[in-house]
Length: 309
Image (cartoon, rainbow, N blue to C red; front, top):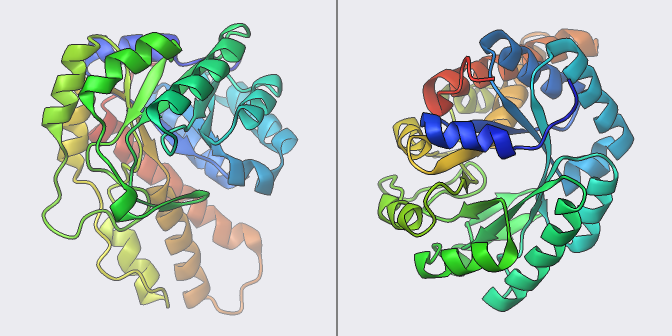
């Protein structure tokens, strides 16, 4: 099966009251862990690559790994650029075989955001590629994204309909209280479902995206800390809130931090208990298995997209 875009995935997700997982990938083991679980559960899948991951792993290597995953799973897989910061990077990955791109113009004024998003949309749509835009700014740090709390802002529902109509964008990332990284809430965790409901009224049937939606699974944080890490007080998004969002207008939920924590926790545990081991296969295998377990958990308990491929 070839790489597909997310148009049909999102249509089914919206109508079915579930979301598709968008899992960030960096290397072979992470791709294997994600796709093996999706195959087992017959779930649709978005593999997404940040600019940093593309630079780290090399575009050609990533494409070949994704092609191998398609051959092994025979699943519909969308290959997505996460947080494209310019027209040039979006163009490069479109020309290089990606089926979906995000242009993140959220740090610009509304008019500038419309302009750059429309430019990417025009180029992408001519080539059968879909585009995700963003309105509002999430706090937090992840790869090239670094937004302080004072610079974060909720999405304004009054702007959404105009933005969608003027840009022709295919999906929209919004800010309703999630944040990038492992530290999401200082007080009681909450998401602004009132904003999500209002957006759903303004653009009915339109697919919404949640970034910064890792739940920061405590078992992996504890394991990292046990073996010399230092992640005190990390608190993610409660999974029941994410499930509620996926039953509304949210069709795509991004998951990266939980994968990083699981992968790192298993490597730390293995090296801590086997300090003389220098065989990468022995410490990367449990890390890959941890990725697989996280993805299964998310598909069943958060996304609700098992048997929806």
